[in-house]
Length: 426
Length: 191
Image (spheres, rainbow over the protein chains, first blue to last red):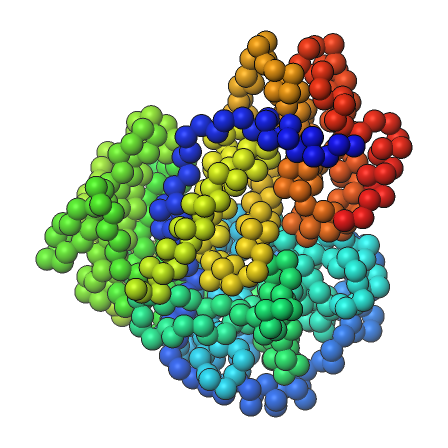
């Protein structure tokens, strides 16, 4: 076969591309927004290495446990009450489903003001994540990110290779396909509460916490100081191997034995089915009839022992994320952006804020951002029409005709989460 | 220069330099320029989130293609992709040159392939990836890539046979492998 000719024909088949609608600036701003929810700002704590050394004696031995049979796509599990027989197929938007249990010294969910950041609960394809941080120059783990998927979201691929699966001996290792990403599994890990567990290329730990439901624990190391730096670049799992050992664009990481032991113990103690409702730093009145909270990702943080919602959306059925309200401690967020030609400064409650308006065919949108209102950073994002339509008004949208109008219906509850509410709609 | 602005500059420079090629690959996958641009937009947004890690990798292009192809395949699995057809127009071929006519036949035939087969063909014959590289991007075994390639080319050939009475298919039959011997050769190929 003349493959080069097929290449040429494919090139011809592409033809002349029309003008692009790809917007790099938009990708950056949306990417920054996502990063904002992924970032962790945690106070300095702890000696993880020492704790890990102690824990070596307390966890299960490495390797597939006896009685663990991997055959095809179905995996038999040891009888273990901690294994969830009926994991949820949807997560609640109001209640984080999972939380850390045991944590190494220096990691704490209760006394870390912003210890948990999270994103994404709701639909069957969505996931829930939490992150704890405890920077330490001695430890090789500075933060832990926990992501729990709903039942049925992930599935093992290349399952036929699981039967004899061993990391370095498997030429075609299995992968865990979670829809949003496919993770290449590289070795087996000790069972977690009777369920199978694996390490992936990046050194993350994946385990089946309930029937057909998978969780991920990602150990992160600190790359750039997070000390209240607005340009904090986040936590990254940087390669532990030299660049020469990195192949195919994926930094392959093998954590130290002590770290792996630590991660297994953290994973084994994760709590599921939590019932602590989130609290909100605001109340909102005048919500149009028929508008409901969106079944799309939300974010939350641990604040003062409470789970605080930091990104909330609602809207009519035709645009369930028509309105987004994000309220979080002022020092944690990125500064409000200024987009020339779209942003203007306004004064709300005596504080300068930026009001950005996009008024283009098929996109009519407004945002209001204030860096610090009584210790809180506020973002309001509002679709002025149904996205993708040419000026089709939002059902019931007259009450919230602009981001400033929404602000008029909003009451901020101050920086102390103890005074926040579990019922923001008034 | 702040860390963020440096990161943004590097990201912007990288994406701007590769935007054209990313769009072309996306178009071959999606068969529609609007959807292709959406795919590229989603891809570069995800790329930005991971830029700190990606920019240090030696094969950034491969990483980006991986994001794009998996995003495309994930999207195809969603109900939305099955329900919605944007109905891209196929250009008039009446005055096309033989090469262009054949290319348009390829495009129409490619559009009929299942998403995974289409992605495999595009990766192998447009992105010029070998079997191992395509397997890495698709997250499957090389054997699967080989079988998908064989099936994809076979389907292309069969699809094009239905148009062989039209002038536009002229050049095509010379391009695609014919018969079981060619198919076996492709399946047995090592990347």
